[in-house]
Amino acid sequence: MKLRGKVAIVTGGGSGIGAASCYAFAREGAGVAVVNRTLDKAEAVARAIESAGGRALAISADVSLSADVRTMVDRTASELGPPDIVFNNAGVSPAGRITDISEADWDECLNINLKSAFLAARCALPLMIEAGGGLILNTAGTFGIRAAKNKAAYSVAKAGLVNLTRSIALDYARDHVRCNAICPGYVDTPLNEGFPPPERDAFLEQYQPLRGLIGAEDVAAMAVYLASDAAKMITGQVFVLDGGQQAGLYA
Image 1 (cartoon, rainbow, N blue to C red):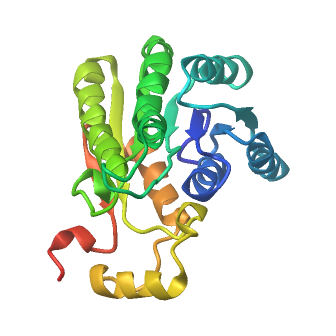
Image 2: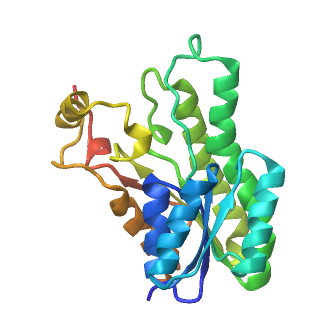
Image 3: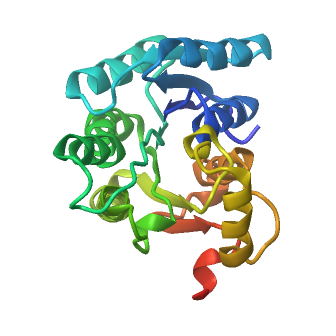
């Protein structure tokens, strides 16, 4: 087991990439704090992990709130042990140009996609440093590398997350804390359920060179690798998992 004895916190763990990562971490031996704004979703994932013989803790938290993040980290440390892995995966994906999106939606997008990672890192880093090191992993997405039309707030938040990743990596490398980002392309998850299959398939046909859908399990497999000792010298890096979309420009 690649993660035997480790403790992981996964935000947005109730569905999609987060749930797949919780299951993958648990299969590799980690105790997992499943964090979700909706408690029943977190509890369902935690129960499935425990039914398979793993250790899990369900936590309800609004990761944009400092008090909730502090409780999330403290409960994990108390009930599972100090976190070795913090996977900042929770996110929202509003559409709109800056003249279309409301100020409230802009704030929510930046708070959940970017501020939450800052809050989680700030709370978890002292525990990681005291324990001898760890990994902070962020889901940034390809819009963090290149902006897209009609996705202003999301593109800005994810671009900020890419450089937050690099900043943490530089500032805490000598404390044996690594920080990396995963940038998935289109992933078949509930976050994208508003993209009907005909339009989705036409989009992928045009923009994704490799055939097929990227699954949440594909992202989870990369997360496991980055959390394992096989990646012990990898930090400050952005890993693109997009079926080849970023390899070139497509008309």
